[in-house]
Amino acid sequence: MTIRLALGAALALFAAACSQPQVPATPALWEVSGPDGQHGYLFGTIHALPAHVDWQSGRIDAALERADRLVLEIRQLDDSAAMQAIFTRLARTPGQPPLSAKVGAPYREALAKLMQQAGLKEAQFADVETWAAALTLAQAVRGAADGEGVDRALMAMAGTKPVEELEGTARQLGLFDALPEEEQRDLLDAVVAEAASAASNENRIEGYWRKGDMAAIARETGRGMLADPELRQALLVDRNTAWADRVAAMLQARQRPFVAVGAAHMAGDEGLPALLAQRGYTVRRVQ
Image (cartoon, rainbow, N blue to C red; front, side):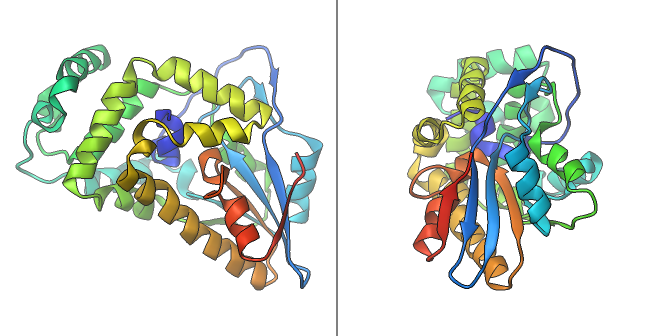
């Protein structure tokens, strides 16, 4: 399970652009309908996608045009300073043990190498909680993205339509902050363990997303950090259940949402398409 796929919008703090030949993509899109005329759409995203990937299509444009609102995990993506301020407020507690003492013994050498490569010092984490150190290292592994990702592009495409959020920055980071220390350390171990293969993993995931291969993405959600039962429950299953309830409430209120969240949240029997189908909606993949 790659860092980007697992942690999603929590890492979307900044991005930059570059110019490369365009690569076509046909990511997965679903239409949701209900017995009383309810209607909406589900779209799995990648939060930091290279700018040269051409993922927009007539079907996506038409779905967003028919929708009456865009619904994202986090609406505040265009205000990285505010996101960073929330992160800083939640992340710091004085008297933290050394970071090297928080990571499992088998990963300490890899942690030292990762920090050296990223130009980070252990003293910088003196008052940083374990989950926040894990996200900081994950961001260092990911580096500066070379595109602004699908979420920001959808916000621009939505024009004057309202943009709503399923979680928001404070709530999403609060999920990590609320993890028991043992699970925070499991998260840290997973980030360090995956660091060496992060680039190849992310290229593989991007390939699955471009092809709309949700079966492959579902398999990825059973690996790495989300193979840990407690992390999986907190970071994927519980959130998907809460989001399915929110989307169902929108549909019942005759709203027409275009829901765009990380592709991992759309995958498998615990993904939003399956959960909405369990609630009695007809969910049909249209791309």
